[in-house]
Length: 307
Image 1 (cartoon, rainbow, N blue to C red):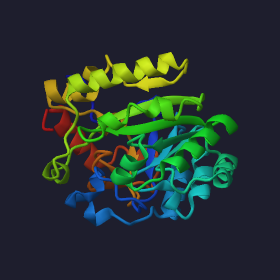
Image 2 (cartoon, rainbow, N blue to C red; image 1 turned 60 degrees about the vertical axis):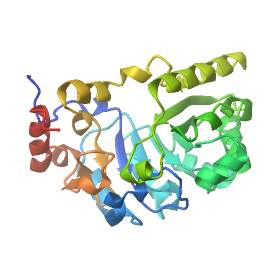
Image 3 (tube, one colour; image 1 turned 90 degrees about the horizontal axis):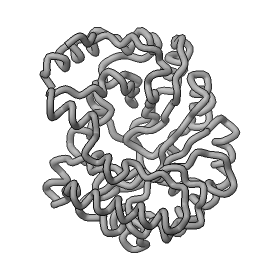
Image 4 (tube, one colour; image 1 turned 90 degrees about the vertical axis):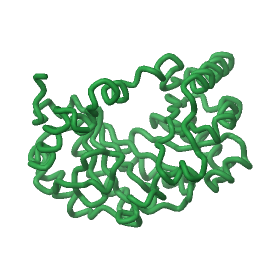
């Protein structure tokens, strides 16, 4: 009741600043939401690097982390190394998410030299044939890359796995496949982001009960191998997502208040899941762009429960 549509908090209190560098991709994953018709207008684009430079120049504050991500494969961005260096002006911690296909020991070293501190690799099955079917990816290559990062670098390493009704049974082998990668910090299982295209193909989110059972089994395997991986969420956190609870109880989502996301168009989005909803030019810097009139209007409606 007392919330303000204006975001005035210390920028270090945001969990991250996300920057979509590219929407180009070298894969066609079975459940990627880039195939939803809503996203067609923003595919196969790169963020204008000069716009990003202007944003950094005009931003006064620093952030807990800069996450280079987006609806594409980050290693296809032609100025990735320059973008990592530039991001270091905004935060000590710079992360990117990759499908891992183009990663090599040599370019990983270059990314680290530029300032990369965290890396996420997306793997949605731990069976060679199924991973090829779902994503067209060579599991052996990813195993070598994950082992290299784990054992030969100081990068904070996270594995991301989308969980759906179709691939859940092919996730349990992750512990067996990667049990030599002692320095995986987090294994993040991500509930399916359902779109009309997925519904048409019969791909559904996993039922909560089945999701919990999967996580309990995975945790048991992790403990039995003596690994220190953090499983996120844990089996008891599946029902406790605060974003989902706020949507259910108040018809409000707080992503537009605390999750700043720069789209490939060089604009802030209403929502990180809706790349096509970009509204506020980032060139004036964070402090001005994040409280752009369009975003303030959107947040006012959100606070009224007009979700």
